[in-house]
Image: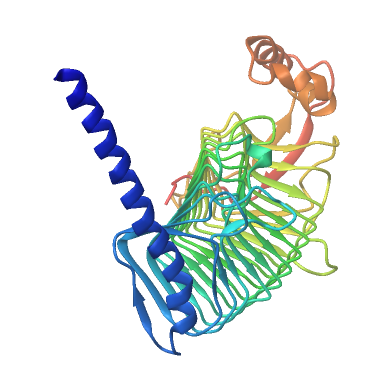
Length: 411
């Protein structure tokens, strides 16, 4: 009897699976049919279940998963191809895209304007949301992660290519590669969170974008601008960008950048500047930022002018400022910054040091000039050498930078 009952259970279980698969087959087939049959302005509300992708949306409709529906691409292509204007995708779980970097297999490929993608979860998709030549879209409150592969082989969580006027806000991206903005301008990237990626935010040849109120932590690099001009970076917190390439906020050949009211904490390098600003007669404004607990507060690739450091707070950095090619940072403007290692006085009680803050390079210059020696940066050996050099210099120390009006109070 026991064996017979066991066989009956197996048969019933097989019948149940067959029934479920038939139901799912009807659902999977009907989803694209329902989209194809919909009229402009229709709302398609998905019942709980798993629907088969990829699907194509080429008309102005709303697709609502009610946080109970999943679309599964089965490991082929993108889950949703959005090729229209004014559509809304919301409250849906999108999963299991293909693996092609060439085809940009993604949770959603966007090829249109004025669409809204919100409150959805995208996981096990190579790329998250890809916008190409798409304008004035809204990407809001989504959670996005890539496939469980090595960091360099993942796709980007959010990717903009020749796309203008989009709003990327309140998203949580993790375990993806980058959020990247290529050849795109006038976009808003605000109130996002990102962790365990490569570049939390990466700009290439992108102009006049705004980056506000984001929180990026435990990425290889926080925010990096390459060949990008007129970008505003405000009220962001970037922390724990560690490793050999760890940078909080970096720039390469980028001009007219405004970086204000940010917090750069516990990074290998707080600010990194490489031939920036690049355009003649331009200035990068770096003001009112907190740069604290970094290995290096500000690192210049070479002796390059045009950056104004005003009213920033430098606290508990192992090295405040360094220049990699042996030059100085004195051709930049340093004014009214707070330096926690300032050793001067304030006899007139105006909260400004009576003498300039001067930052010199002693024996710790070794790790800047000899790349292999950087392995020992912060080690007891170099710390002892640096201490002895300050007591009795073997050669004149190098003046790295000078702030003529250092503040004594960090506000």
